[in-house]
Length: 148
Ligand SMILES: CC(C)(COP(=O)(O)OP(=O)(O)OC[C@H]1O[C@@H](n2cnc3c(N)ncnc32)[C@H](O)[C@@H]1OP(=O)(O)O)[C@@H](O)C(=O)NCCC(=O)NCCS
Image (cartoon, rainbow, N blue to C red; front, side, top):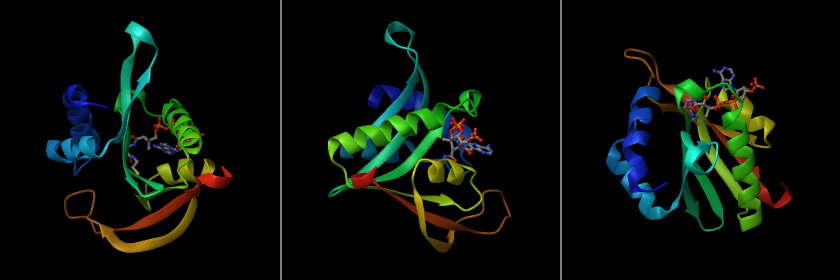
């Protein structure tokens, strides 16, 4: 991902999340440097379909934002992209991938199926995802890349 991707990324971010990241958050993430646009197709036919924002911490990678744009969701693209990313991280020598996810998010099933374990719960971590709704627990997950 680079600066030129941000208009598209922001338009998807605003569509997908009730509490979207601001542009500044993405700019700071670009400075830290482990971020990807997921594309479908190749060469001149490449089409952006999603993005991943990660923060490297020593030998671990924390997945901060993982999103497939609505028209492309539920077609297996998120699974394929994450699988490729995990393989790449293994090759690059990262030891562990970490993330947190709303307990109600069906992405939990995806993460479990790709080798993430559920390590714990952070109670009431997220604000409600609809006006007036209650706070929600975060599920803390990690994947040991050294045995992946
Ligand atoms: C989570 C997300 C990245 C998954 O990408 P995707 O391309 O839609 O997912 P896939 O089609 O590859 O599906 C992979 C698995 O995820 C799970 N899943 C994803 N979305 C789901 C939904 N709406 N309902 C039920 N299961 C779902 C299923 O286990 C699915 O496997 P299956 O198709 O064999 O049942 C995407 O749905 C998304 O961007 N969601 C909104 C943002 C978000 O919540 N990101 C994760 C934050 S931690």
